[in-house]
Image (cartoon, rainbow, N blue to C red; front, side, top):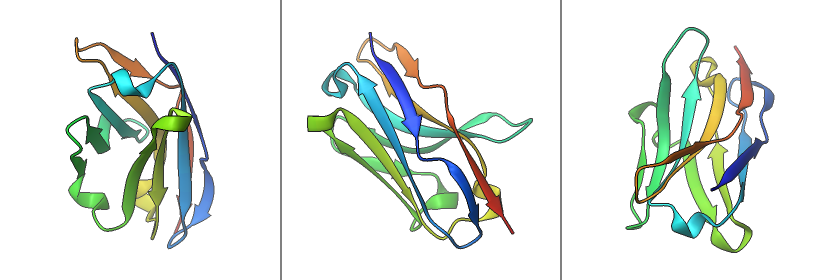
Length: 116
């Protein structure tokens, strides 16, 4: 069992930056996939970025070149550095871990608001 807690959301003007953090209670080394998702009001929860245990990092086309996902296994933490933020980046950002058996673990989310 893994519990996740996201922090770092907030209000920022377009063009600004935020760094989201996800602290895991439980080891992230057991995860097969670690990811960040975003959900805007009335929208589906969409994948923003993910890291697989094979070491591959993937990004949604809309954030490539602006967002960077990283992990710190010593701190059982994930991060999402978001630069050049746009109003369409706003939403509730969730940290996600998937186990090799396919179980999904979610945090409670952290809100990102970007003004134009």
